[in-house]
Amino acid sequence: MVLLQQAGLRVLGIETSCDETGVALYDTAQGLLAQALHSQVDVHAAYGGVVPELASRDHIRRLPLLIRQTIHQADVSLQALDAIAYTAGPGLAGALLVGASVAVSMAWALKIPALPVHHLEGHLLSPLLGEDPPQYPFVALLVSGGHTQFMAVEGLGQYRLLGETVDDAAGEAFDKTAQLLGLAYPGGPALAQLARQGNPRRFTLPRPLLHSGDLNLSFSGLKTAVALLVKARPADDRADIAAAFEEAVVDVLCHKALLALQQTQLKQLVVAGGVGANQHLRRELARRLRSVGARVSFPPLELCTDNGAMIAYAGAQQLLRQPATATQGAFAVYPRWPLQRS
Ligand code: KG4
Ligand code: ZN
Image (cartoon, rainbow, N blue to C red; front, side, top):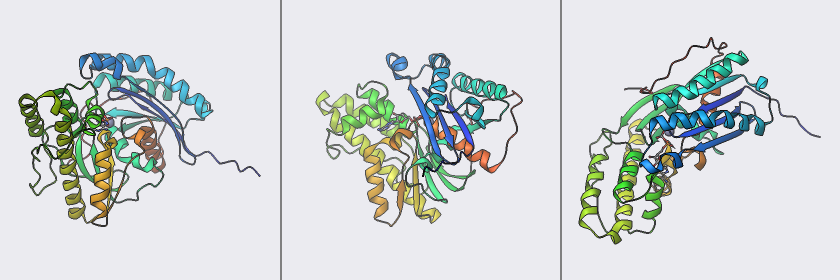
């Protein structure tokens, strides 16, 4: 006998906050039905970083194709959609406007709600899309190119900021350090790959704010220390420097993660954001948390960096919690938008 699974609420998610165009369709009963992603790495590589205007233009070019591809792959009609969720911020203003205007126009034509989603809430909820999803409450460590913060997550929409970086984000530090080491954009994964061939104990780099007693972090001094080391050492030492840098970042993040769990008396850490793809961080966090009887969850690897699935999922959770009316066509984007300030 074939059991037909009932459809739940179907939400299309659109992510265009930076240099990835992401689209996905999430069904609250059946899970993720389809997703499509286009990375703009090739567009920005020559400039060594994201060029906002080029990002917006590429989102415009890719988004309609990715939406069509996602709908086709899920084998549903546009009329089967219950809502369209889009990243409303934080991010690059022009890039956000592309996703928001496409989402709101489509929702308006289909007479369904358009749901603005906070990019960091998308990241923060992305581990819930994994095989063994964590239960609330938990401590979230958001480590992306733009943010590095600890949050106490009591439930959907209940986020309390525990501490954050006072200067560079962890991903930004990876990217800038990679540049110092002569690695191509995007630097994070390239640096991690180089670090694998190096000896992390040959050079000892500073661990800023390690013993500050609070949950704030700092990475800009670390980058400066690498700059001095790169100048002083021959090119052959680059792998050892990369390994020492990765070791220092991972050590600080692990130390503060343990402190966050201790301060909140929670036993579960959830890691989200691009740097969450770092294998050394994953291994060390799992090992060090296990030793204190806590556990760590990560999103599936492909959902660590920006994607449409996390936006569709966050939108669907919003809709489950509170029914929404069809869009009237008005919208706004928020390039700077704190998730929660303590
Ligand atoms: O979350 P994300 O895709 O975009 C933002 O919202 O910022 O994160 C991108 C960041 C970049 O800084 C990138 O270098 C970093 O995540 N990243 C990594 C790795 N993969 C991506 N950093 C370290 N190791 C990795 N394997
Ligand atoms: Zn992101």
